[in-house]
Length: 177
Image (cartoon, rainbow, N blue to C red; front, side, top):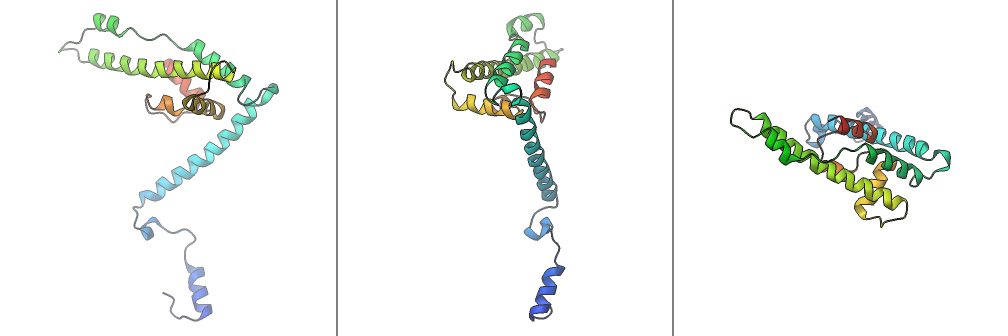
């Protein structure tokens, strides 16, 4: 409370308050301030990324959703490996009590195959839909929008390992794994 309720005293008290309130004022832990700063930074960088990819995708007379996405999906599809034969790997590296890494290998191959199947399915669907050869479902539209923005689609991230990389770096990392 201000020392006096006179207009000038109240105004002076208000001007003395900090411009940015600490999280404790709202009953939050001080880590909430770090989370807020991280979210603001991510929003800023996401906005910059959207601006950059629209400029890049819009070059050479191609629309952001037209030829650029078709070429990009074709390029990524050509680089995708085949699904791993989990049965053949399990025969070559049987699950034994003394070698637990074979269990991990089998589990990772199953997870990788799930992700690879989603990536291939959505890439193929967006590739056809961007050419007008298939119907754009809600999932494919979300993937298309993510490709235009240069981010990893949610459909991929639902089956993926944790990653905060943009689309190009994610695909490179995914293929190297």
